[in-house]
Length: 267
Image (cartoon, rainbow, N blue to C red; front, side, top):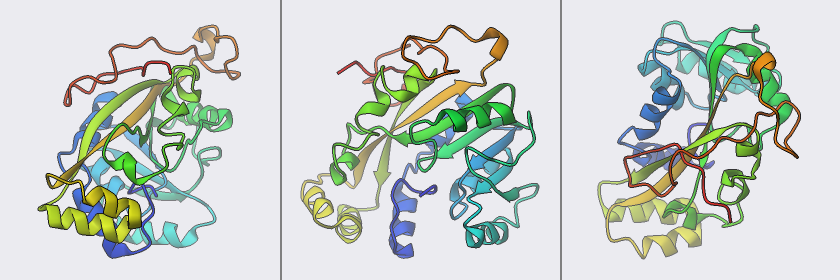
């Protein structure tokens, strides 16, 4: 689930979704703005089919792709799929145990599948492999959009994670909300994917379409590597080692395209 926000067992369906998701490239531009990515040593956690790895390399990243040690098939497959990209390394590793050298990366990037919490052990490992000033960039769904109608409203992505008292903001992360789309050539094409890939919820959403695209909001939770000697005092109740929550720079419902750092209003 690292190339896409949902596992679609049919490769043909997955390909159709991959071709529609964020064709404007807003997510990639936001990651580079927050990293940056270009010209840096970047670790991608969970490479899946290699789609996001290729995008990061297209920005100029010197890339190391980690895949779970128990998925040797994925590690071997990624090595073959990315063999045409110069300087890309594929290795076994997990967020809490990367196996990488200390201070060896400028940025750690994750799309959807990792850092689902986040876990203090995983954050400490990211800090270990990041150089001073290094950046941890974690992408998850945000909701408040058309796509969220396909899933349970109780998903943590849509509820606790983006709250000011949620695990990310209390843990020293800031949040940038990106207003994206799933864009199709026609309403018929969009409706077919929704019905084929998402069953009854997809059919219900397809029946409401008035244009060949769906609004899709994602959140990039981002933080700079902690400096133990300069760490601010943690807020009461924060996890050990966590920095205090950042103040919001803008409201989350800014106009599409503005893509501000935003802290959602408490609910």
